[in-house]
Image (cartoon, rainbow over all chains, first blue to last red; front, top):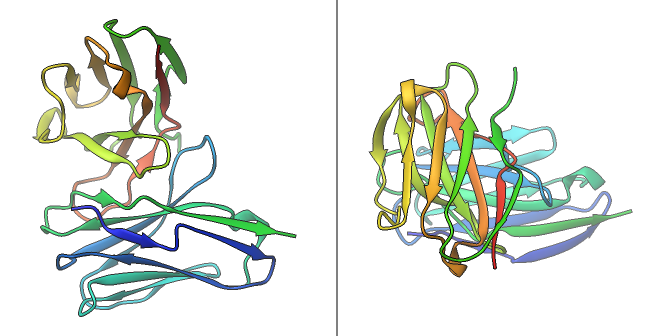
Length: 110
Length: 114
C-alpha cells in the first residue's frame, strides 16, 4: 500500500529549512529515503528501522514515529544541491519490499 | 565501485512491438529489482530476484512482461507486445541482500510508446 507524502512540492531559498512527511495507513517496519534529480537515478539517503531512531546525512536528517506510522525528513540550512524529488519507500509487511510514495519536489533557489 | 548499468537509455517503439532492457548490477549484489516509474509517480516494483531466483513478481503483468536473471548476475526485462500505458522509465536496482539494505539504482531506460 502506497505511502502518502506531503507536501507535493516546496520552494526554498538557500539556507531555509523544510520538512517532508511520509505517512502510512499500516504499521511500518522500515522507511527508506531517496532523492532523484531530473533524468537521473534515485540516490539512497538513509534507512530508518522500527524503533523510532533518527538518522542524519550531512544536514539532512529523518525521524521515524511508530505510533503515528509516519516518517519525516528534515532539510536543514538547504543548499542548491538539495533540489530534487524526494521519495520515501515503506516496508509494511516486514518482507523488505518497498512501496514508494509519489514524491516531494524540492526546489532550492539562490 | 561501478554502479548499476542499464541499456539502452532511451527507446521509442510503436504499440504492439516488443522491447528488451538490460541491467548489470553492482558486483556482489545478490538482490536485483526492476521498477516501473511513470511520470510524476514513485517507482513501482515489478519483480525482485534473489540471485537467479524470483522472490516477488506479484505486480508484473505476466501476459506481456517477462524477466530473467541468468547466472545470478545480469538481468533482462522484456515487454511483448507493448501498450501505450507502458510508457515509463524502467529502473533497475541492486542491493547486497534483501534485508534492509540500501538499493542502488541505475539511470533507467526511458520507454516511449507511439
